[in-house]
Amino acid sequence: MPTSSLRPFWVLPPLLLGLALVLLLPRFSRPPQPLEQAERAVKVRVIEATPAPLVPRALGYGRSQPLDRWDGVAEVAGTLVWLADELRAGELVAKGRPLLRIDQAPYRLALAQAKAQLQALRVKLVTTERLIALEQQGQALLRRELERKRQLNRDGSLSTTQLEEAERAWLKGEVVVQGLSNSQELTRAEITVAETQQAAAELDLARTELRAPFDLRLAEVLVGPSQYVSKGQRLLRGDGIEVAEVEARFPVGALRPLLRQSQASSGEQPPTPLRRTPGAMRLQARVRLHSATHSVEWPAQVTRVAGEVDPQTQTIGVVVRIDKPYAQARVGERPPLMRGTFVEVELSRPSQGRPILLPQSALRKGQVYLLDADNRLLMRPIKPALTQGSVIAVRHGLEPGERVVVSPLMPAVEGMLLDPEDDPKLLQRIQQEAGGAATRQGAGQSQGGRQGKDGGA
Image (cartoon, rainbow, N blue to C red; front, side, top):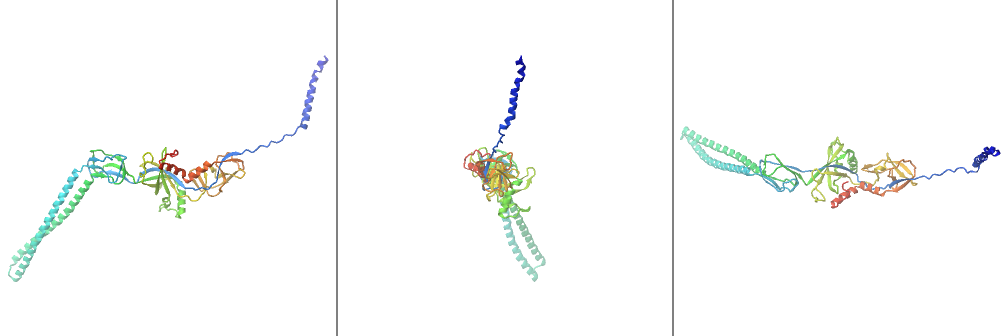
């Protein structure tokens, strides 16, 4: 019984002990020490600001057209009696090669008739000239006889009636001579007409045969054997192979840097509406045909600039000329530049100076991100001197050797610690793009007969 009455007091000692620990423990414990967090560097890709040559250029696209085009038209009517073996679309034909012939029989007959008529008129002219000569001799005799009778009449030995008869005989002879002279002049005029008719007959006979006016490629043949053709009917169409042209379309602003720099380097005044843009004529031009396996390149020359801007696309046309587009064609390796081929046209000018080249992605709202000596972020505003494709050229605001951040950085806080990693492949790529090396290498592989993997890019 006494034991059970003391049980409620058994819990007091543990409670008192716990209270004492709570009150005394803070006196013997050490205060918490603050933790120092290490600053984490953000990994970024960088390139070194390096001056490099820049070839200003612009790319446009268009379709090739032959400079010389020929529509073979029948100049005389008739039935086709002969067609050349080469008279097929796609065949190459040399200058002067006969292509087809119209039946010449009626034109040979017309020529023979004209020759016969001309010969008859010439005989008539000779006969008239001989008659005139005889009549003139007779008139000379009548003239002397008339003078003798006039003298006799003055002496009283001849009557006036006899004198008048002599005068009438002389006048009648003069009429005959004048008539023969008129006939002579008329015959000469008829001979001129006959000669013209003979020349026309000879020309019609020559026109029965159609020949190639220059070296060409047959684009279309519209007639067949034994077909009757009428005068003025189109028989075939051919394209010249000596010179080709391409009117390439360029964005309006793409040519401005090229023309401005070209005029500045030559000291020319800005073009006026009444004067051509000579700066465009000095630009270097190259034409490229890209396929899935390789690229083909032709040197070209700028000949003129289109007179207006396309209101739909806001582009302007530049016409370039390609000489000998068929000269270096090789089957399976280098195709000829045919009508309608879609090609790329590159306009460029010689490199001037060595600006610092950066990828366009390195420019962020007018600023570039740099690294200082402690690998911390610096933000510096710059203004590109030229933007070309994915490359920008900087002439002021950067120093060679400075490190430029080229990878995305979010968020970007000036002074933040960065962990840089060089990107030499990017630097090499933008230098090649700025110098046009990548494009020329692709075209060069095709010219050497090699096929490149990146030729169709």
